[in-house]
Length: 299
Image 1 (cartoon, rainbow, N blue to C red):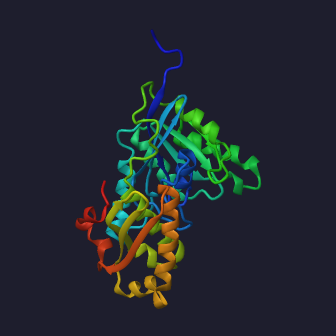
Image 2: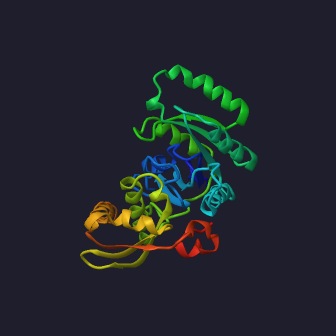
């Protein structure tokens, strides 16, 4: 006998240019800090999975690096490939566009989704930053005629506006099937990965100009004890001159980064964290793709 209200579940990729608000949307939908968020472009460097379980079924969200035109480092090219490959083997793509400032990079991302053949929902984000809402409908009409999405949704990931409508639209376009993960899971990412990302988030927030883009974080030890978690993490810099900037005078910069990362870890993991944070040099690591896997960068 067929269930009266069958469950709809599937894999949904968030795709768009850097700073479109994909990671903010991921965290808002999941209800946890799965993806790190800063105001700097290319904050997301990995494919991160968040899991949303609701009465209609389950949405497996995949956050991706922003599609961009920068090509000066092997890392930039790697991130574009990760984003593009995230369109393979999925059920639906959410094309996230900054409605307040759409650019050619937004259109390039839209073309990538359209060419993939994956069903697409066009998500105009940041509507809270638009003074004249009557400009949204003409913009949506033009984009719909060009890229032919299944539906268009207007949201503010930051404020939460329009999220329930987005959930309804997503479930409508997912296949009828049982959940892919247990209902109490909210990510497939390991705690080690999340810890490294929370350190990198503070590097991006607390450092200026090009310095944080040349850094990556490796968790060398992760031990969960009864009353706390002990973590040893190493910040690697691409240029020797950046090491002193990150450490700061009398170690104050590194202490601030470590303290704020530790507080974020405590909130996420639910117990106190002892974080031992050091800085090392891996000269030119951003240009050596053969070493990316060892630093946690995988397809």
